[in-house]
Image (cartoon, rainbow, N blue to C red):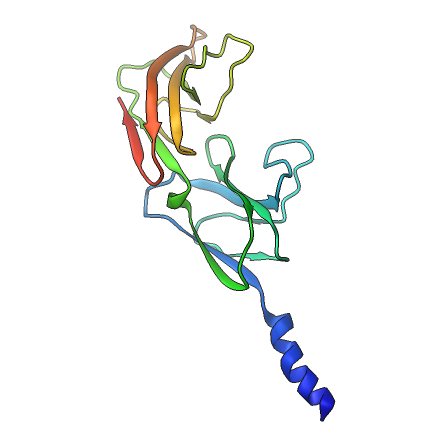
Length: 184
């Protein structure tokens, strides 16, 4: 009788899983290559010594986390650099929902009149790719692209494919959470 009583209360404790579902308005974010969870503070996707806890291929997939965390959540676009969308996140027992549009913003660059090449997003006031202290936040392989970034102020650079010097095409691009900043 005691064993049955213990099993009755022990089974729900083992059955609890931390599942995570992702949401975002349709067509808000650029296509995802992966959504990755790492231990909080560990290197992200593409970095040396990167170790993923869980990785899913799209926003429609659910992630099953093995413990209580804390975790860092990385959004990896198909064309661009991984972004740490959430740092040191702890799941609740059972089902969890993460709204990526509550964490990220998008820069939409039209690229009209621009040469073919790549796009670079840098912090506002960055001196450009030719300098030593240059910091790239996000990239795109085409001059017409949408780039997922954290909220903040940025500059957009075009690096022509013909080898010409990179040039800043937009400065002071303000990106807000859940919004798209359009740059012409």
